[in-house]
Image (cartoon, rainbow over all chains, first blue to last red; front, side, top):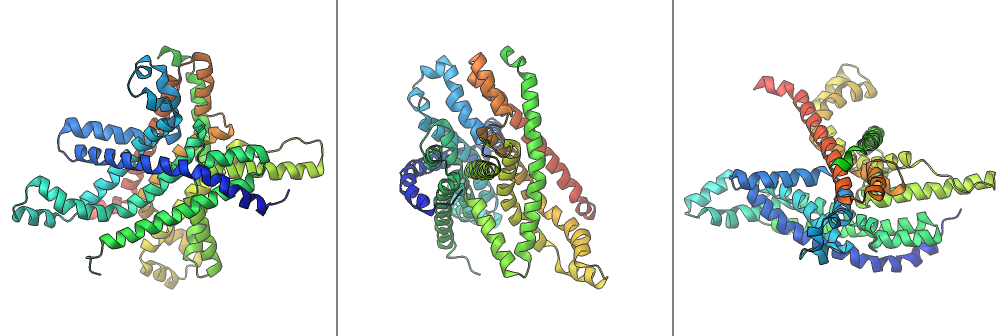
Amino acid sequence: MSFDVALIVNSIPKMLDGLELTLELLLLSSAIGLFLAVGTLLMRISGLWFLAWPAMLYIYVFRGTPILVQIFVIYYGLPQFELIRESVLWPVLREPFGCCVVALSLNAGAYVSEILRGGVLGVDRGLHEAGKALGLSAPQRFIYVTTPIAIRLAIPAYSNDFISMLKATALASTVTLMDMTGVARTIVAKTFAPYEIFIAAALIYLSMTWVIQRGFGLYERYMSRYVKE
Amino acid sequence: MSVVVGWLDEYFWGAMVILRVFGVAVVMAVLFGLIGAAAKLSRSRIAKGLASTYTVIFRGTPELLVLLIIYFGSAVTLTSLAQALDPEVQFVDIPPFWAGALAIALVVGAYMTETFRGAFLGVDHGQIEAARALGLSTLQTFVYVRIPQMWRLALPNFGNHMLSLMKDTALISVIGLEEIVFVAEIAITVTVKPFTMYFVVALIYLAITTAITGAVAGLEKYANRHLERAR
């Protein structure tokens, strides 16, 4: 057995083709997930039980089960029902890509809403009272006072979650998608050189993680520019 | 739902398999975490560098990829070693159970390294000085003074890592471990009820993660009992 460095160099361009799909999954699911997270957060802090309970159930179920199982339930499971096969959602749920986006978005929504809730709860009550004293209405206080501070407080945790999302996109390869991991697995099946190929893929993931961490770090610094040491 | 009943015993044994993987992996992950944290807090620059490399690599690579590298990598290595001794050998691998447990433990161990490091730093330095003044050796200080005080601080994050570890066990079906996802796959080929069968898998995971959350909450209450009295 030998370690073939040339094979790593040669396989990286092929894997970068898969990178496009990985990025599509990541960005699309994160965007939809963020949308779901804000909705879930508002339901949870609404103070109305019939909104708060479904939100909590949603968070509980999606945080308590593996993403792989969620993807399998949605991709292999849902077509069991005629209702789904005849619904307007079928064009999305028929494709492995659509199913992965649905599963990853629902997952991100559950995790991120908890992160945002942490941010909202971390906002000093005094600021809230100051807003009230200035005559801001409840929605105004939430939008202009709570939200900007909550976002800053939530950035570190959100950055970690974004990286988890990147890692979770690798699961798309289990439902035949050709993301970076999928491409790597196909090349390994042909060359039977697991170390070289998988390590090359890992290197690309690692550099993406680094970029994400740096990016959110800079954003956090920008958002904290008025915070005195 | 009646189709599920006939498969319940299979699911039960599958659940036993993931619980065993989980048990083995928790022990390994705690070991990796403790070694990593000790290395990060040591004065040796080599140890610090190695620990940082470990955490960067395993926190930034997808769990699935780590699993594939360890399982297929070790299979290639072991097969070529075995063929050097005996050319008749076709294929040798580490059993998926152990390869899987090792892979998920390496990933979660990297997260635990950070948690344990923070918790060790959270223990008042005066405690360590007091231990030294009482004549305790470094090892005794570690076991009797630092560990009992750090685990309380590490618990909330540790609980989250246990949940990730539990959920990561589902990945091991990819390399052919006969656990509950595998049971569901077999059941589907017979019954053609994919939703029902995978839904049962999800429910089993939900039950186990709920139990873990409850256990960690109980432990936290136990660990913080001295604070309750003070109030």
